[in-house]
Image (spheres, rainbow, N blue to C red):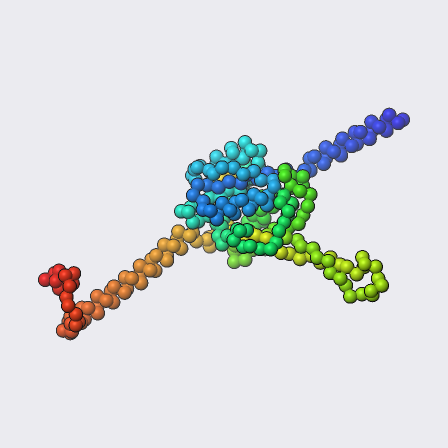
Length: 297
């Protein structure tokens, strides 16, 4: 009877252990950039790699047109998530979140970034600790935001027992939506003991309480969703942000406004000179070699 009980117990433990292994959340993230990133972009990449113990950092990608090669690189490193930073004109930064190799894929414009070295915040967190992810309720408003929420959860959520992770949770990563943009913030969970105003004869354990507060660590940045693709770096377009205006269009509009101001100013000067000549009013100054009357006499 004892031998039968032992055999049954062994099979039971085997099935339970197999169930636990099946339920493991195995997420690994490949983090890399393209050519042309600035020093601030590199510092941001190092900050994110330090925050994500389940990530794998790789060298820069040479091409910007054949991004589907990232799926093969992720397969080599046994990663099922890709966090790719694409730099344009040494000033614009785009971030890609992709599920390799079948997708989907999200492209966002990253701006207003500040690294840990720039902010000098007092908060600090243990390297390799698992974060708590906090999402705004607006993420559940539309299917596109629900998909982006799931992609962010797979990328920034460190699974239990992940590579180089510590069994601690001492910081919170917050994702909030405002003005159609996703705001990224990182906070430390700070604990402080506060004494209550009670009877002095009471035990010490009853007079001391622990208060939790959040202290920002950094980095911080803002992401604007642009497009969601069905595949990984390719495929049909699932969602497109019609309100997004590219930085190139904004800079072109600024240049056109400056050119329009200069054009109107030169037109007014020409009209004023013609009017003064028609009235016979000459300026009291010596004519130079480059004056119109001398050149076109």
